[in-house]
Length: 566
Ligand code: SF4
Image (spheres, rainbow, N blue to C red):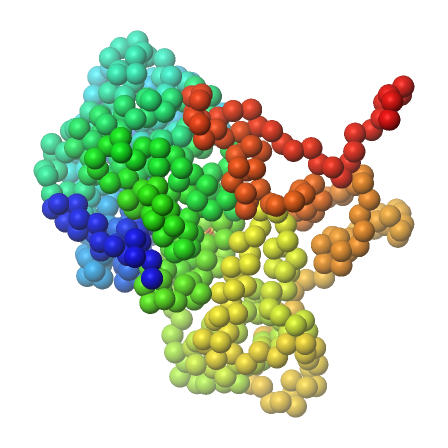
């Protein structure tokens, strides 16, 4: 199974056991109390799970580059020593790990933010201070020193983060670099910053150390790089001493979704494919690759030499081992919801995962065999009931799951019909598999009563019967034209041509998406997705963008104007 994905990658001085990179994610443990112990457990579990090479969350090379005051930095031997527990744990588990060096530039949330030019980011509250010529040279030196400290800490390599609109990207794009010294103006000058960084890092770490350069191959913003410039930079980065080039897609301020669940699987691997043959070092592709089938296909069709997946390893640390064992059905798939990973990060919480709450909580949430086996009834086979029943069964309890419907899923069965939420099918597939594998006895089409539960003599009963929608007290709510979301999504009641959706929360948006999309969901049709969002695979203009063309929803036909012939 998956011959391309599981093939080792020989880098000359070292060999990766397969083509799987666990991409960088800032998980919040970098700054947490006991964070290094927790990161050691987090990364070691993924190393045991078979990942070829992991990249840590971004670590700043100096104070200016921190995401916020107190954000993770590596600039001293004392700081390096703290990482040792992480690298030792990963190596003991048979893995390899690189540390990402990330300077936040004008995306930083602290008063001392810096950038090539004082141009405020549309997603940031503050205008950055322009770095002086000497400060830019010092920043290059800080990157090199940071890499040397990472090597001292036992990492197998570093990833220089040059994409997503952070400092390095701010230097390479004319939209953010208005300098007139040797770091600005011509493209040669604008790309000097990343090239000098990679050159200095290589000088400092020697030959036998992995340097991944995360190259912004598709900026997705006005004033971004042209493809010729991207190629020119890739070749210069190779010449400067990088081992591997990873793909970066879209600045954070881009209007185009790049990792949301509505993005088709593998939607951006064509970008890496365009780079193939332009450099001699391996290329990694990325974004919305979440199953071994997609990863294998991407490699088999020659889009890249290696595949980066990040969130899929929050959802399931054993992804690679399960794939290698021919058990892809047992993989808990990342559904791209971002609810417990990115949303947590942006609200200052430690990352977790909607489908795997143990992610980043490995030392706290330990699921161990029970010493007192019980008979447990779980009522309701929605996501909560499924998680509770299968976890209890895995711990050794005797579990019966009652469900009034004929199948698992509960509210997920309603959500999965929304265009852009097709990934929900994967969670249901995972749990169907998990019910069998864990030994849960499922009784479908069974609306169980309290008396029946008492009669059967269960030791514990877990209620997971879900929610009933609230009917707001709005005048006219009883009018025959008024439907609830369940009437529309579950019961398929007829809906007219013009529709007012009341309530702009998640369900309101979902209903609107459901009613306005016709035919194949853009999430399953890459050409449609690219048209709708204005992504140009021919890369005719800078940034790879073009005018978006949102298809006209035929639910509401254009109203005839007075005098218009119909
Ligand atoms: Fe994936 Fe959602 Fe888990 Fe994030 S929270 S890793 S997007 S399933």
